[in-house]
Image (tube, rainbow over all chains, first blue to last red; front, side, top):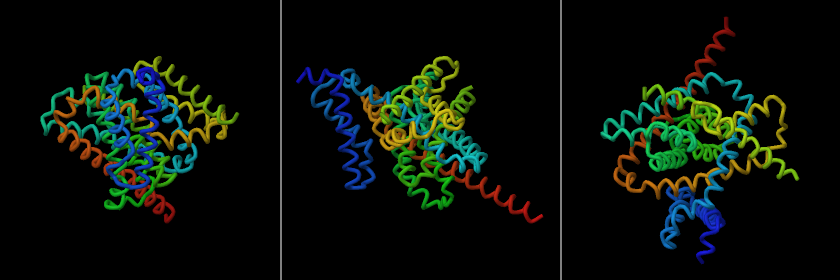
Length: 227
Length: 125
Protein backbone atom coordinates (compact mmCIF):
# COMPACT_ATOMS: atom_id res chain seq x y z
CA UNK A 1 0.00 0.00 0.00
CA UNK A 2 2.72 2.47 1.03
CA UNK A 3 4.71 1.78 -2.13
CA UNK A 4 1.63 2.58 -4.15
CA UNK A 5 1.01 5.86 -2.32
CA UNK A 6 4.63 6.93 -2.64
CA UNK A 7 4.62 6.58 -6.41
CA UNK A 8 3.98 9.78 -8.41
CA UNK A 9 1.33 7.71 -10.16
CA UNK A 10 -0.77 7.94 -6.98
CA UNK A 11 -1.33 11.72 -7.11
CA UNK A 12 -1.73 11.54 -10.88
CA UNK A 13 -4.30 8.75 -10.82
CA UNK A 14 -6.19 10.10 -7.82
CA UNK A 15 -6.58 13.48 -9.54
CA UNK A 16 -7.75 11.88 -12.79
CA UNK A 17 -10.22 9.57 -11.04
CA UNK A 18 -11.62 12.52 -9.07
CA UNK A 19 -11.92 14.58 -12.27
CA UNK A 20 -13.60 11.84 -14.30
CA UNK A 21 -16.05 11.08 -11.50
CA UNK A 22 -16.78 14.77 -10.82
CA UNK A 23 -17.39 15.47 -14.52
CA UNK A 24 -19.69 12.45 -14.79
CA UNK A 25 -21.63 13.52 -11.70
CA UNK A 26 -22.07 17.05 -13.04
CA UNK A 27 -23.23 15.86 -16.46
CA UNK A 28 -25.71 13.49 -14.84
CA UNK A 29 -27.16 15.99 -12.36
CA UNK A 30 -26.35 19.44 -13.89
CA UNK A 31 -26.57 20.61 -10.28
CA UNK A 32 -24.77 23.90 -9.76
CA UNK A 33 -23.03 22.94 -6.50
CA UNK A 34 -21.61 19.83 -8.19
CA UNK A 35 -19.31 21.98 -10.34
CA UNK A 36 -16.57 19.45 -11.25
CA UNK A 37 -13.82 21.42 -9.52
CA UNK A 38 -15.64 21.51 -6.17
CA UNK A 39 -16.47 17.79 -6.20
CA UNK A 40 -12.99 16.75 -7.36
CA UNK A 41 -11.11 18.87 -4.81
CA UNK A 42 -13.38 17.69 -1.97
CA UNK A 43 -13.00 14.07 -2.98
CA UNK A 44 -9.20 14.31 -3.08
CA UNK A 45 -9.07 16.07 0.30
CA UNK A 46 -11.18 13.28 1.82
CA UNK A 47 -9.02 10.50 0.34
CA UNK A 48 -5.80 12.20 1.49
CA UNK A 49 -7.20 12.54 5.02
CA UNK A 50 -8.47 8.95 5.16
CA UNK A 51 -5.19 7.46 3.96
CA UNK A 52 -3.14 10.01 5.96
CA UNK A 53 -1.17 11.00 2.87
CA UNK A 54 1.10 14.05 3.36
CA UNK A 55 0.62 16.90 0.89
CA UNK A 56 4.15 16.48 -0.47
CA UNK A 57 3.42 12.87 -1.46
CA UNK A 58 0.30 13.93 -3.32
CA UNK A 59 2.24 16.69 -5.06
CA UNK A 60 4.74 14.19 -6.54
CA UNK A 61 2.09 13.28 -9.06
CA UNK A 62 -0.26 16.25 -8.93
CA UNK A 63 2.46 18.71 -9.95
CA UNK A 64 2.63 16.95 -13.32
CA UNK A 65 -1.01 17.88 -13.87
CA UNK A 66 -0.51 21.49 -12.73
CA UNK A 67 2.33 21.76 -15.22
CA UNK A 68 -0.13 21.12 -18.05
CA UNK A 69 -1.90 24.37 -17.19
CA UNK A 70 0.82 26.16 -19.19
CA UNK A 71 0.18 24.44 -22.56
CA UNK A 72 -3.57 24.48 -21.83
CA UNK A 73 -3.53 28.25 -21.26
CA UNK A 74 -1.29 28.72 -24.30
CA UNK A 75 -3.89 26.79 -26.33
CA UNK A 76 -6.25 29.70 -25.82
CA UNK A 77 -4.21 31.43 -28.53
CA UNK A 78 -5.55 28.83 -30.93
CA UNK A 79 -9.19 29.54 -30.11
CA UNK A 80 -8.54 33.29 -30.31
CA UNK A 81 -6.88 32.77 -33.70
CA UNK A 82 -10.00 30.95 -34.88
CA UNK A 83 -11.95 34.14 -34.10
CA UNK A 84 -9.44 36.62 -35.48
CA UNK A 85 -12.04 38.38 -37.66
CA UNK A 86 -14.24 39.17 -34.65
CA UNK A 87 -11.18 40.25 -32.69
CA UNK A 88 -10.09 42.67 -35.41
CA UNK A 89 -13.63 44.01 -35.80
CA UNK A 90 -13.98 44.70 -32.05
CA UNK A 91 -10.43 45.37 -30.91
CA UNK A 92 -11.19 48.70 -29.22
CA UNK A 93 -14.28 47.60 -27.20
CA UNK A 94 -12.48 44.44 -26.09
CA UNK A 95 -9.40 46.36 -24.90
CA UNK A 96 -11.46 49.01 -23.12
CA UNK A 97 -13.77 46.41 -21.55
CA UNK A 98 -10.91 44.36 -20.11
CA UNK A 99 -9.15 47.49 -18.83
CA UNK A 100 -12.34 48.63 -17.07
CA UNK A 101 -12.89 45.08 -15.78
CA UNK A 102 -9.39 44.79 -14.30
CA UNK A 103 -9.62 48.19 -12.61
CA UNK A 104 -13.15 47.59 -11.29
CA UNK A 105 -12.15 44.18 -9.89
CA UNK A 106 -9.19 45.56 -7.94
CA UNK A 107 -11.14 48.65 -6.78
CA UNK A 108 -14.13 46.56 -5.71
CA UNK A 109 -12.00 44.16 -3.65
CA UNK A 110 -10.13 47.04 -2.01
CA UNK A 111 -13.43 48.70 -1.07
CA UNK A 112 -14.93 45.47 0.30
CA UNK A 113 -11.74 44.60 2.19
CA UNK A 114 -11.87 48.06 3.75
CA UNK A 115 -15.55 47.63 4.60
CA UNK A 116 -14.92 44.28 6.33
CA UNK A 117 -11.67 45.57 7.87
CA UNK A 118 -9.52 42.78 6.48
CA UNK A 119 -5.80 42.88 7.29
CA UNK A 120 -3.44 43.96 4.49
CA UNK A 121 -2.09 40.46 3.73
CA UNK A 122 -5.58 39.02 3.20
CA UNK A 123 -6.55 41.94 0.97
CA UNK A 124 -3.42 41.52 -1.16
CA UNK A 125 -4.20 37.78 -1.40
CA UNK A 126 -7.64 38.57 -2.85
CA UNK A 127 -6.71 41.43 -5.20
CA UNK A 128 -5.50 39.42 -8.22
CA UNK A 129 -8.26 36.81 -7.99
CA UNK A 130 -9.95 37.53 -11.33
CA UNK A 131 -6.79 36.54 -13.23
CA UNK A 132 -5.62 33.04 -14.03
CA UNK A 133 -3.92 31.04 -11.23
CA UNK A 134 -0.39 31.47 -12.55
CA UNK A 135 -0.63 35.28 -12.70
CA UNK A 136 -2.54 35.61 -9.43
CA UNK A 137 -0.04 33.51 -7.50
CA UNK A 138 2.95 35.44 -8.81
CA UNK A 139 1.33 38.81 -8.06
CA UNK A 140 0.19 37.78 -4.59
CA UNK A 141 3.59 36.40 -3.62
CA UNK A 142 5.41 39.46 -4.94
CA UNK A 143 3.30 41.76 -2.73
CA UNK A 144 3.10 39.81 0.53
CA UNK A 145 -0.11 37.84 -0.03
CA UNK A 146 -0.84 34.35 1.31
CA UNK A 147 -0.46 31.70 -1.37
CA UNK A 148 -3.26 29.36 -0.27
CA UNK A 149 -5.75 32.18 0.21
CA UNK A 150 -5.01 33.47 -3.29
CA UNK A 151 -5.39 30.01 -4.82
CA UNK A 152 -8.68 29.47 -3.02
CA UNK A 153 -9.92 32.93 -4.05
CA UNK A 154 -9.01 32.32 -7.70
CA UNK A 155 -10.81 28.97 -7.66
CA UNK A 156 -13.92 30.24 -5.88
CA UNK A 157 -14.07 33.17 -8.31
CA UNK A 158 -13.79 30.82 -11.28
CA UNK A 159 -16.48 28.54 -9.88
CA UNK A 160 -18.82 31.48 -9.18
CA UNK A 161 -18.20 32.89 -12.66
CA UNK A 162 -18.86 29.54 -14.34
CA UNK A 163 -21.93 28.94 -12.18
CA UNK A 164 -23.61 32.32 -12.51
CA UNK A 165 -22.46 33.70 -15.89
CA UNK A 166 -25.35 32.10 -17.87
CA UNK A 167 -27.81 33.45 -15.30
CA UNK A 168 -26.29 36.96 -15.31
CA UNK A 169 -26.33 37.02 -19.12
CA UNK A 170 -30.09 36.39 -19.02
CA UNK A 171 -31.05 38.60 -16.05
CA UNK A 172 -29.00 41.61 -17.13
CA UNK A 173 -29.80 41.11 -20.82
CA UNK A 174 -26.28 40.89 -22.24
CA UNK A 175 -27.46 40.22 -25.79
CA UNK A 176 -24.11 40.98 -27.41
CA UNK A 177 -22.16 37.69 -27.56
CA UNK A 178 -18.79 39.45 -27.71
CA UNK A 179 -19.66 41.44 -24.56
CA UNK A 180 -20.78 38.28 -22.75
CA UNK A 181 -17.59 36.40 -23.65
CA UNK A 182 -15.27 39.24 -22.69
CA UNK A 183 -17.11 39.73 -19.38
CA UNK A 184 -16.78 36.05 -18.47
CA UNK A 185 -13.05 35.98 -19.21
CA UNK A 186 -12.33 39.28 -17.44
CA UNK A 187 -14.23 38.28 -14.30
CA UNK A 188 -13.53 34.56 -13.98
CA UNK A 189 -10.43 33.50 -16.00
CA UNK A 190 -9.96 29.91 -17.22
CA UNK A 191 -12.81 28.27 -15.32
CA UNK A 192 -15.23 30.87 -16.63
CA UNK A 193 -13.74 30.34 -20.08
CA UNK A 194 -14.50 26.62 -19.89
CA UNK A 195 -18.15 27.59 -19.33
CA UNK A 196 -17.99 30.22 -22.09
CA UNK A 197 -16.78 27.53 -24.51
CA UNK A 198 -19.92 25.55 -23.57
CA UNK A 199 -22.12 28.56 -24.35
CA UNK A 200 -20.55 29.04 -27.77
CA UNK A 201 -17.28 29.09 -29.69
CA UNK A 202 -17.42 32.89 -30.10
CA UNK A 203 -18.04 33.42 -26.38
CA UNK A 204 -15.24 30.97 -25.53
CA UNK A 205 -12.71 32.67 -27.78
CA UNK A 206 -13.61 36.14 -26.49
CA UNK A 207 -13.41 34.87 -22.91
CA UNK A 208 -9.99 33.34 -23.52
CA UNK A 209 -8.79 36.53 -25.13
CA UNK A 210 -10.17 38.69 -22.32
CA UNK A 211 -8.53 36.42 -19.74
CA UNK A 212 -5.11 36.91 -21.35
CA UNK A 213 -5.47 40.69 -21.67
CA UNK A 214 -6.92 40.96 -18.14
CA UNK A 215 -3.84 39.20 -16.80
CA UNK A 216 -1.67 41.87 -18.37
CA UNK A 217 -3.85 44.82 -17.26
CA UNK A 218 -4.12 43.43 -13.71
CA UNK A 219 -0.33 43.43 -13.42
CA UNK A 220 -0.40 47.14 -14.32
CA UNK A 221 -3.41 48.05 -12.14
CA UNK A 222 -1.89 46.12 -9.23
CA UNK A 223 1.32 48.11 -9.36
CA UNK A 224 -0.62 51.39 -9.51
CA UNK A 225 -3.07 50.45 -6.74
CA UNK A 226 -0.38 49.42 -4.28
CA UNK A 227 1.80 52.43 -4.92
CA UNK B 1 2.48 10.88 -35.45
CA UNK B 2 0.22 13.93 -35.68
CA UNK B 3 -0.91 14.04 -32.00
CA UNK B 4 2.75 13.70 -30.92
CA UNK B 5 3.78 16.61 -33.12
CA UNK B 6 1.00 18.73 -31.64
CA UNK B 7 2.00 17.86 -28.07
CA UNK B 8 5.62 18.57 -28.94
CA UNK B 9 4.79 22.00 -30.39
CA UNK B 10 2.65 23.02 -27.38
CA UNK B 11 5.24 21.80 -24.85
CA UNK B 12 8.08 23.51 -26.70
CA UNK B 13 6.18 26.80 -26.75
CA UNK B 14 5.43 26.42 -23.02
CA UNK B 15 9.11 25.83 -22.34
CA UNK B 16 10.02 28.89 -24.40
CA UNK B 17 7.44 30.90 -22.44
CA UNK B 18 8.97 29.71 -19.16
CA UNK B 19 12.40 30.76 -20.34
CA UNK B 20 11.22 34.22 -21.48
CA UNK B 21 9.35 34.67 -18.20
CA UNK B 22 12.62 34.26 -16.31
CA UNK B 23 14.31 36.86 -18.53
CA UNK B 24 11.69 39.62 -18.12
CA UNK B 25 12.10 41.71 -14.92
CA UNK B 26 8.31 42.17 -14.34
CA UNK B 27 6.21 39.14 -13.31
CA UNK B 28 4.56 37.94 -16.53
CA UNK B 29 3.55 34.28 -16.24
CA UNK B 30 5.01 31.67 -18.56
CA UNK B 31 1.54 30.61 -19.69
CA UNK B 32 0.66 34.09 -20.94
CA UNK B 33 3.98 34.39 -22.79
CA UNK B 34 3.46 30.93 -24.34
CA UNK B 35 0.01 32.10 -25.43
CA UNK B 36 1.48 35.22 -27.06
CA UNK B 37 4.12 33.09 -28.82
CA UNK B 38 1.52 30.66 -30.18
CA UNK B 39 -0.71 33.49 -31.35
CA UNK B 40 2.21 35.21 -33.07
CA UNK B 41 3.33 31.98 -34.72
CA UNK B 42 -0.18 31.32 -36.07
CA UNK B 43 -0.81 34.92 -37.21
CA UNK B 44 2.57 35.29 -38.90
CA UNK B 45 2.04 32.02 -40.75
CA UNK B 46 5.07 30.37 -39.09
CA UNK B 47 2.87 27.59 -37.77
CA UNK B 48 -0.10 26.04 -39.51
CA UNK B 49 -3.29 25.39 -37.56
CA UNK B 50 -3.20 21.63 -38.06
CA UNK B 51 0.03 21.37 -36.04
CA UNK B 52 -1.80 22.33 -32.83
CA UNK B 53 -5.56 22.17 -33.50
CA UNK B 54 -6.76 18.86 -31.98
CA UNK B 55 -4.48 18.88 -28.94
CA UNK B 56 -5.24 22.55 -28.21
CA UNK B 57 -8.97 21.80 -28.33
CA UNK B 58 -8.48 18.76 -26.11
CA UNK B 59 -6.49 20.68 -23.48
CA UNK B 60 -9.02 23.54 -23.47
CA UNK B 61 -11.91 21.13 -23.08
CA UNK B 62 -10.31 19.72 -19.92
CA UNK B 63 -8.78 22.91 -18.49
CA UNK B 64 -10.67 22.35 -15.20
CA UNK B 65 -8.54 19.25 -14.55
CA UNK B 66 -5.34 21.29 -14.44
CA UNK B 67 -6.75 23.53 -11.69
CA UNK B 68 -7.56 20.66 -9.31
CA UNK B 69 -4.09 20.30 -7.70
CA UNK B 70 -3.97 24.07 -7.03
CA UNK B 71 -7.28 23.77 -5.20
CA UNK B 72 -6.13 20.84 -3.08
CA UNK B 73 -2.76 22.40 -2.25
CA UNK B 74 -4.26 25.84 -1.54
CA UNK B 75 -6.87 24.49 0.83
CA UNK B 76 -4.50 22.12 2.67
CA UNK B 77 -1.80 24.75 3.14
CA UNK B 78 -3.94 27.63 4.35
CA UNK B 79 -7.16 26.04 5.57
CA UNK B 80 -7.01 27.89 8.90
CA UNK B 81 -6.64 31.36 7.39
CA UNK B 82 -9.46 30.72 4.94
CA UNK B 83 -11.76 29.25 7.58
CA UNK B 84 -11.09 32.22 9.86
CA UNK B 85 -13.03 34.54 7.53
CA UNK B 86 -14.89 32.27 5.12
CA UNK B 87 -18.30 34.05 5.04
CA UNK B 88 -16.59 37.37 4.22
CA UNK B 89 -14.28 35.55 1.82
CA UNK B 90 -17.17 34.05 -0.14
CA UNK B 91 -19.11 37.31 -0.09
CA UNK B 92 -16.17 39.35 -1.43
CA UNK B 93 -15.52 36.75 -4.14
CA UNK B 94 -19.15 36.71 -5.25
CA UNK B 95 -19.76 40.48 -5.21
CA UNK B 96 -16.50 41.41 -6.94
CA UNK B 97 -16.96 38.72 -9.61
CA UNK B 98 -20.49 39.97 -10.30
CA UNK B 99 -19.50 43.67 -10.37
CA UNK B 100 -16.52 42.95 -12.63
CA UNK B 101 -18.70 40.89 -14.97
CA UNK B 102 -21.30 43.64 -15.32
CA UNK B 103 -18.79 46.49 -15.66
CA UNK B 104 -16.97 44.62 -18.44
CA UNK B 105 -20.11 43.48 -20.26
CA UNK B 106 -21.71 46.94 -20.26
CA UNK B 107 -18.47 48.63 -21.33
CA UNK B 108 -17.96 46.27 -24.29
CA UNK B 109 -21.63 46.36 -25.36
CA UNK B 110 -21.76 50.14 -24.91
CA UNK B 111 -18.65 50.82 -26.98
CA UNK B 112 -19.83 48.47 -29.75
CA UNK B 113 -23.21 50.27 -29.84
CA UNK B 114 -21.51 53.66 -29.90
CA UNK B 115 -19.25 52.59 -32.77
CA UNK B 116 -22.22 51.25 -34.74
CA UNK B 117 -24.18 54.46 -34.22
CA UNK B 118 -21.24 56.55 -35.35
CA UNK B 119 -20.77 54.39 -38.41
CA UNK B 120 -24.48 54.63 -39.27
CA UNK B 121 -24.31 58.38 -38.75
CA UNK B 122 -21.25 58.71 -40.98
CA UNK B 123 -22.91 56.79 -43.80
CA UNK B 124 -25.93 59.13 -43.63
CA UNK B 125 -23.85 62.26 -44.14
